[in-house]
Amino acid sequence: MKYITTAIAYLNGAPHVGHALDFLLADVLNRYQKSRGETTFLQTGTDEHGQKVASKAKALGISPQELCDENSALFRALWQDLDAKYDYFIRTTNPNHIKNCQEIWLKLAENGLIYKKPYHGWYCEGCESFITETEAREKNFTCPIHNQPLQEISEDNYFLKVTALIPQIKAAIERGRALSTLDALNGETTARSVGTADPSDDQYLKILPDFRASEILNLLEKSEDVSISRPKSQVSWGIPVPNDPDQTMYVWIDALSNYLTTGHWPASTQIIGKDILRFHAITWPAILLGLGLPLPRLLLTHGFVNVDGTKMSKSLGNVISPTEVIARYGTDAFRFYFLKYIPTCDDGDFTWAKYDAAYNDLANTLGNLVSRLANMNNKYFAGLIGTQNEQSIDKSDDSLPNIVKSLAKYHHFMQNLDFSDALTELFNHFRDINAEIDAAKPWTLAKSDDTLPELRNLLENWSSRVATLASALAPFLPTTSQKILAIFQPEKTVYNGEILFPKPETTTP
Ligand SMILES: [Zn+2]
Image (cartoon, rainbow, N blue to C red):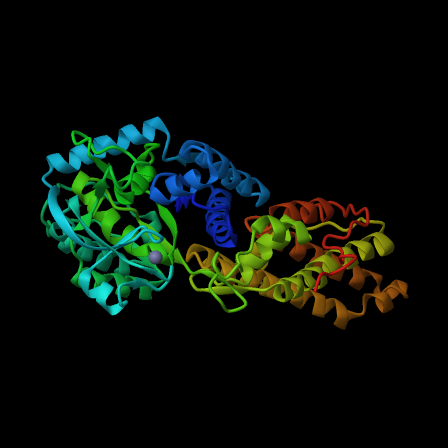
């Protein structure tokens, strides 16, 4: 079983393209693993508690639950718009989740990992995060993101004893680093006793990309215990701390526990943005180790989608709505851009001009290839051009060496969760076929009976390769893949002249 999770989206706003990227990476992995015969389970959802949600609801004159209901529905709708599929959508206001969180809290307390102490420090309500005295001084007591003075806080908080678990977390990350991605995904991690590091422990946690593992190992050197509650007087919209009515759970246990709710733990792959890596690579393993549970096998960390080189932010007014982008050229074009032009593990950039250029590339490279090839099959051989299936192509290395090589590379990238390079590889091969067609000049071969057999061989070869590549394309562009496979069938070509990626009638500047 491969259990895949996305980060759960915080409901203080509507979905942006960064959320869409997170969901698409999970969807591609899920579709790919399924196509390799794996059983999978994909969970996503929404993170609904916290003071920001409560303040926003108050400003809108509705209850926090009403705001959550409205915004959570937008995220579910986005999955549908993206043609992405989940198996379970969790909401952290769900009574079952609330009950689980309280049980987790009690178990951690029972294992001696939670204590209460007065906290004195700094806090940004916009970020909903604590800032140490040193950091606050460095920032001149102002949040650089929200451009607001930090609040000075003196209150009682519960803390999670992360420091007691640091040796175990470090050892697990170092073990994960030594494993290949494939071994990490296929390996087993087992539950171990709670407490100090056991030298025979085989728990591991692989972090992709690898330089992020270094970042976390450095951060672990100076990690402190983590505050896991706030006074109810400060944060009312949240899960009550068991046996202490004056305290509300702060985000960590509430949000991170979502991954445990459906009983599929451990996760095979957790997909997260780089901004929440430290919580998933330090706080979350501490909670799991504190519960005696196995660690996730792999954390896949993606970057941000910038807009014209600038970070998206509400204050700059440059937030791009995925719905707006999908409306321009449809779902598969959206998937194409965000999966190919945004590097899987790095920051990427979006501009409308780049998006238009990518669409033109899609239309010229793939759309044009499919229609010209199908038209030739119809025109010269009445559609009676078949395709070999992938298995037979795999065996005939001599006649079709390039596609075999290309697919081997594709699978290598997919198995290393490098989706953007895998998709690029498929498009390089589509480009090669276009070039071969140009060079072979099929229309001249069609002029004489002597060259017709040669033309037939070429068309069969190209059609087979396009069909094979279309199968490999399925995790990325599911609808397009189906359409191509319906055209280039094993026995014949069936084409009604549909243009896969039509030129838009007008383009907006
Ligand atoms: Zn802030």
